[in-house]
Length: 548
Image 1 (cartoon, rainbow, N blue to C red):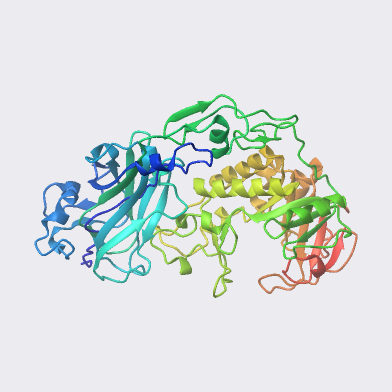
Image 2 (cartoon, rainbow, N blue to C red):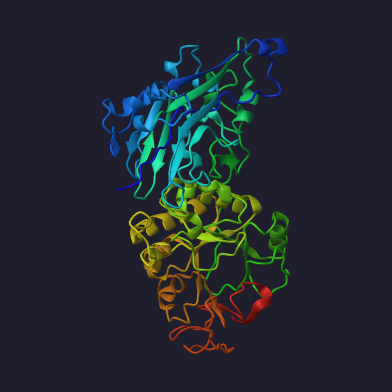
């Protein structure tokens, strides 16, 4: 019989900060600001999305008992009243809705909410046994944001009062809908133990200014990061507002043409860089600066480690620059790693440090670990869009999104139904085509990296190909059919000693054949541009030889 869980109790104070900061030109006097009507009040939830996986444990009222249990405890407001808990079975994810209209002390608008807090008392199993999270719903992006989880909370240790806050980077108003709804949910992961909950409440704080001078149109546009076109939103006084024109763009830039709404940029008017058959290349993902006189027309470099100034230097020297990033894995050392929600790389219920989604066995202590991503989630695509926008702003001509064959690894790992994602070939095709479409919308070329089995289905969407070890495994034929014969470059890398320790005795040559790094049978010189590295380290000064 599973161990009873005395989980969340007392109050759940959902966070949501509201009013956007005033601009420098805001005309409110300090005296007027001091007269603002502020307040805080805790309210009960108005509805639950589902009763699935809950059990009233002998109490009538179902989820409704959560509204009153904290006041019914006969041994103290913050005591452990086990008998009054409602039980949540594993994998529960139903949400609770709170309404601003439930407030009795004031009637703030969504934009005037300055803080939301979740207050709780609970007992529960440690993260090694089970998994649970507290989350709030961000309406502006239609996504859930984690406030806290059971990591480090102890195993069945009574927590008398816990205040859960939104991350400091979040704006509370984004968590309140236009109709005043606020949603909270508890995610209960895998495990044999149920979770028992006593009370959920939302503490709302607000600031209603008694006077407010509306900002200028220019200030409104600037605050919303808009420099062209019509823009609608909420002004500094919390009122709906539309500015018919935030400015115009100079040709050839158009409003939104660079892929970002209400921002001047080039999109449809631009020409994506071409990478025709026979183009020569150099691949270096480790150095942040390499010589500009290497025998290569294309430099492939790391997006994050290479500065805009260095990319300009390469281009001034006549090189096309391709910028590398991983589109299929979460790398915990990247500068934007915090933008990935945990559930995009670690299934709820897992110990992330020992997740079945870790890529290989090469994680190092203290950092440097990589997980496969669930690229079906919108949060992953949001980060990848930002990465391609960064590539565009740095001056890259094209991008090399790596690890775009996660579907072929999903069924190789040893996992439970809870831990497996079930990525399919169809999911991968959809994601890879989305990457190509997004790159082209930013006027970036894009390489298809590996994913050999899907080359026939994807070649038309990509401008050139980059492959590792197709000659070693006799897999290059599809590239000739679908890329080379359509005048698209194929860049190939082989290794004398690869990351798995396997040694291949490649010999330098310029002919064809299956025993050298110059192409499989049926290829002619130039069909593949092959670099042979001494080891698996990808850097220009580790090239054993190049087969041009």
